[in-house]
Amino acid sequence: MSKPVMDIHQILEYLPHRYPILLVDRVLDMVPGERITALKNVTINEPFFPGHYPHHPVMPGVLIIEGMAQTAALLSFRSADGQVDSKSVYYFVGIDGARFKRPVMPGDQLIFEVSLIVAKRGIWKFAAVAKVDGQVAAEAQIMCTVRTVE
Image (cartoon, rainbow, N blue to C red; front, side, top):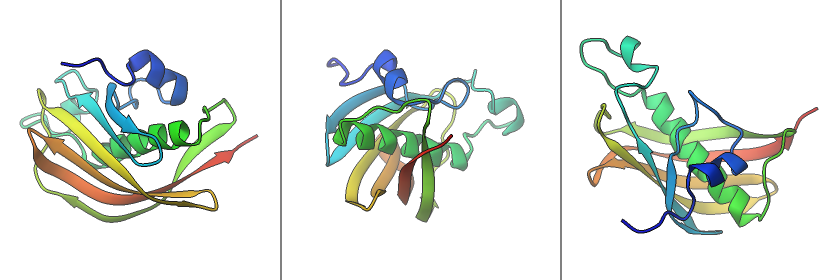
């Protein structure tokens, strides 16, 4: 396997998220202003599996979407050549066309592929796909913005 574009230490410099909500382990490929590919190793130790579902653990779809958004945030920050600080918050503005095609379970490697559609007036729109073993697990168009909070 080739060296990651961003390892977990670099990801932590850009994203304010921490355990248990940090959902990106590594960035595999990135072309700033265009696209990014990132990886999430899904393990049985995830805090949501005991309740979703005890007899058949499945990663919640909302967390797959969140992983795609975190991947999009990394692309946004690297494209704008900026870094998040303690006063920057990355918000969802919209989620369109979200579809879930297959369950994501412990042991899966979830690959997030996110492409920038447009960035205008502080709103970033992305096409996002989450795959496991080359099969689409989820897809959506997501819109996000960065805001400064007090």
